[in-house]
Image (cartoon, rainbow, N blue to C red; front, side, top):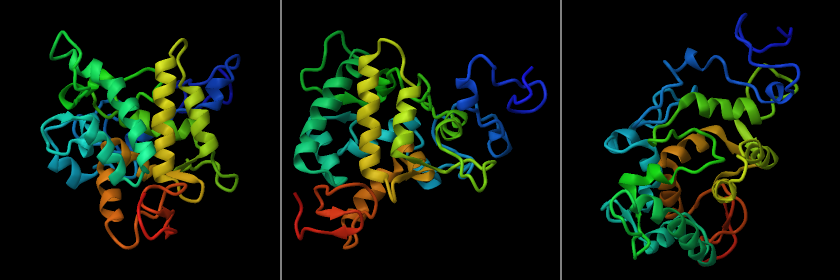
Length: 270
């Protein structure tokens, strides 16, 4: 047993001849804050910092899995179907410009209409709708594993993400970081890649780049913001913030709302 094994005696999580096991650690004490953190939560997304998740959001949408809650923002009329126009309007409401929002129609609807429609029909949907009841069939490879195959949220996998990829501070190396830099996000995507999985690589790239454009502040994505992205509650907050004079004060670059971060640079939207 190596002397630098991580965890209590008898719990060996590193191997000398596999340096990657030392580089990417587990968060071994998640169970101190969350009971049985390895068990997926169907309707709420807890973390060590928020063991009850987004309570108001999860209570309001308690009939949906966390993965379904993640995309409810785009279900404009609550009919369980996300049409291409719903996708466009949703991204516009989040502050993205017309070009990016238009491209998301092809990225999102063309990618996920087939797996979600074949659960209800032998034929692909001619309208390229994404069906929320079957969104778990859209889970792809090379992801984080935070959603399980049925769309539940696995708390231990969420905490492991930060233990493995968020750099600890030199001043306090025993404390896990609570944010990710852009470089760490790319390290995450690289570390989670599965072999011969170009679709999964591309999907992960789109998802993480979009998250960065929405959430970064000071060059880092906050852990709590990311948790709320997984359960979808932050999309409603961003949309509401954009209706105010202050706008949404996070993100990168100028979106369709005319803001760069918290500063409006255009008097109109794009």
